[in-house]
Image (cartoon, rainbow, N blue to C red):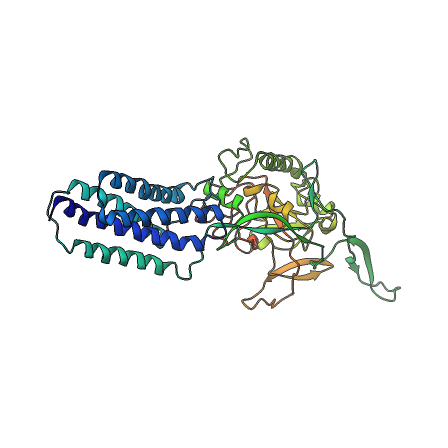
Length: 451
């Protein structure tokens, strides 16, 4: 057998490995059909790797080896980039992803093709067994089939566009989200005191007053689905901005004693960063007037009775229907940390109009990847002396054993004026965190394992 024939047999290891990688990229074309550019890239890799493999079966010139380096090297480098930093200019690859079995095996085949072609060239004069090419076929086929099997039923995690919901909200010059119309607050009669009847009265005399308040209820608002889109992940609903922020280290610890710094955080425009900075600074300026709960109650805030959780919320119900949210001069809820009977104001919880969807365009885009809204849909309430109180959460069947289930949850977000390890917009932990469109392990407002 001539030296050229010997080299050709060795080149078949590289050829079959490249063909296997090309087949896997061909399968990826359909999996990523929602991104035209990405699908075309995979199609080009499929053609290039398979065609090079066909040529390399019978030809082993140095020019063929170099072409294999280029084709399979591009595939391997692309895989490394998508697993470390993402590729910002390719839609669907902007965010770094965790390695999956199929793409990892595909990359290994590409690397094997490079190594095998170099080995074939360096060992072109050495004797090789005639069955070597069969071993190459068996091994490459086994790896390819294993990778194809791993994508059976696989829901890929690349981003895709979905429509947001427009509830007609807008942001005014002060950074306050406003509704085009307001909902008239509900007046309820609250008993403030009851005294026993004296000897010359016919019965008990109750002192009553009118207060503007409303128990948790469902309020219908008009929403429309618009063409404005955001990018979400197939396996969850982080927006692309939130995913980019998370990938760049968000959330990160917040300390009001040091300057606000959003540098290096992805998924945030300069306008959104400026808006978030103003909101935090305004909260630091306006909220401390409610440092004492007595001041809050005098201004119409009432406790929902959740102090045993370590944090107690005081809500001013009239503000739920004033058509304004993220107004630091009129926060819907004040949050006090409770330690040893001492209540310390730590944050405000701003609450949108009940019924506003979490996917509302204005809410989602207010601070980009920095902020995530959540809702509470499992709280059980009772009314005590005309004031709504939280008495627990629903059981596994979604039923309140005590009290009444809240309906029509309103999107909420915290703004902290005290240090927090998970940033200025961190949610509370446990039941206090509510639920968001993303899983708890992925949310950018929680102290989870990824942050």
